[in-house]
Length: 243
Ligand code: NAD
Image (tube, rainbow, N blue to C red; front, side, top):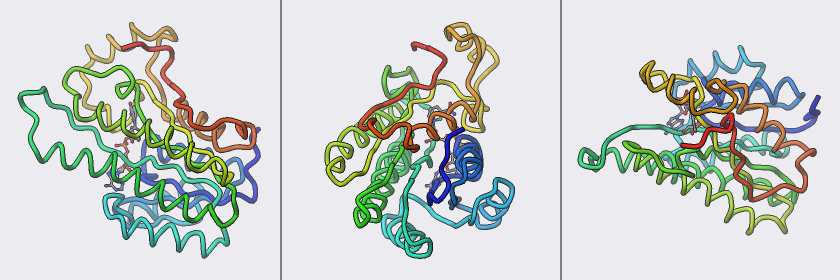
């Protein structure tokens, strides 16, 4: 079993889905985990249910709030070893139906929010010259998806945040990787029709949709010392699905 004892970790959007499963996986491996959510009561509730040290409020679109929260977590715990930039949204629209507001909210959450988190994490980790960051890309960022042009573009950007930041931060001992989940059964995909789920299952060589724990296990590996020579990678966690 991966040992993360003595490590301090932060997971954004950790109140449900992949984020919550990641909090659990890191805490079970012995890390001190701080999770963030947008609602205070839900963040505190999730933290106590998942064995996290604290549940704090954060909107990742607010660069100043991200910077000050990351700084205060690192200060309180004396360091920050692991950051998982998980917070993200998915809003579907066919090309002709894409409204400016959808573009703004998707890019400010998925792209700018991930960037703010990676920047703040890098600043906090730089002092100790060690750390590991994982961002949440997506299979649709790799292949594209009809009705998901904006989301797919945002997740391609997230993958390239990991690739570029890894190049900048490697000499400072900081690794940056992305996971690119396939179709994972969480609240984000709860709106998929049974037909769409069956179609995706049919196209998946491993014959099922993903679970939040499948992604959390990959993240736990990437942040651990077992992945100490891995950086700038985008790891598919998709059962072999090709869109
Ligand atoms: P989810 O909707 O269950 O969880 C997303 C979390 O992000 C929620 O806790 C939400 O409150 C938080 N969040 C959203 N906007 C935020 C903001 N502005 N500030 C702070 N927190 C915010 O979704 P999930 O399926 O667990 O997805 C987690 C990540 O994985 C997302 O980045 C998503 O794009 C990505 N992903 C999911 C799938 C999938 O099939 N579920 C596939 C590929 C990638």
